[in-house]
Length: 231
Image (cartoon, rainbow, N blue to C red; front, side):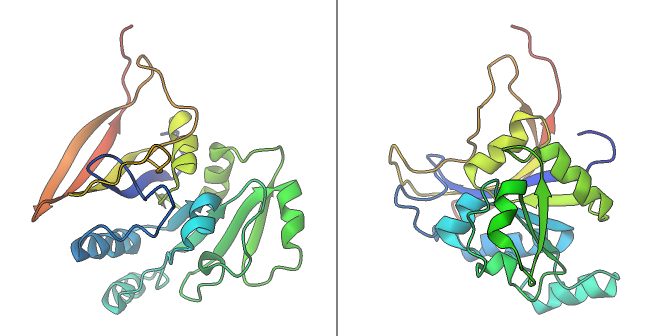
């Protein structure tokens, strides 16, 4: 992680065969209630929740801290009830009415897009539009701007392409992963990481720092280990 940039932690759930949803992109209701409790707890600890446009278009998920007790804990610590919410979309092809850009619980709602993509959101008033030059949004540039807002910790909640964009450039600090005891299969079912991918030589190693189990469901915490792999 580069100095001055927020830590980026992936928060994801997958099946035992590595799928995060079905091939038809159904809402991923395959984990136990404990997984959702963990998700709320982790969101309550972060400064920002970030998702990519593919996740918004497929699932339109809620991103806020919903638990009143967790909201109260944040407020007692001098923070807002729920962290800011960021949607990443280079094209700007995101429904302005989606939950993430309209949730009143969020301290701030942000659409990060390109200069061209911002044209699709002129006159937006329930959320801020951050525009970046070029055809793609560089993760480093987005994190730098978030840091200027006082963000020190980001939860990245998919989808695979967005996760991959941060992994490809070495900006992932760690991973909160739930492994559900179920199988989905499907050649076109989404997985955990997309993007360009790494090579065997440039792969990123992980250090398992926490492991818990409820029934047959596993909850893991990994830190990324930056090390050189011999070829």
